[in-house]
Length: 102
Image 1 (cartoon, rainbow, N blue to C red):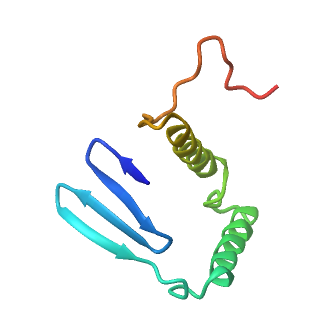
Image 2: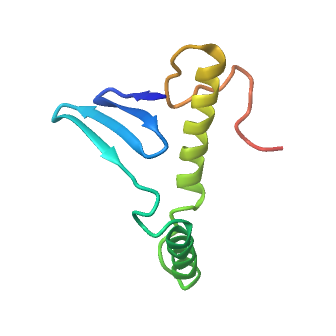
Image 3: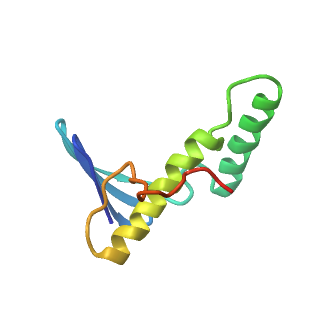
């Protein structure tokens, strides 16, 4: 899978390897499964974000603004695979379609 932007690209080579290319050049990034302690570490971070938000802090990283962007990216990847072609972001609404849930 490749994400193409106006300033570069990100290619997903495998579960743990990305290639990032931009004006600064190209680099490969690897993310070993145990790099951050696995899912336990991720769960701890998410839970701490939620607790800080409940205590009056900033919205958690899994809050609606970030999740909606991630969902749009996932949907775009799916649509791209179905079409066999690139999909531009942000996704355009269909004429007459509403973005408001009913």
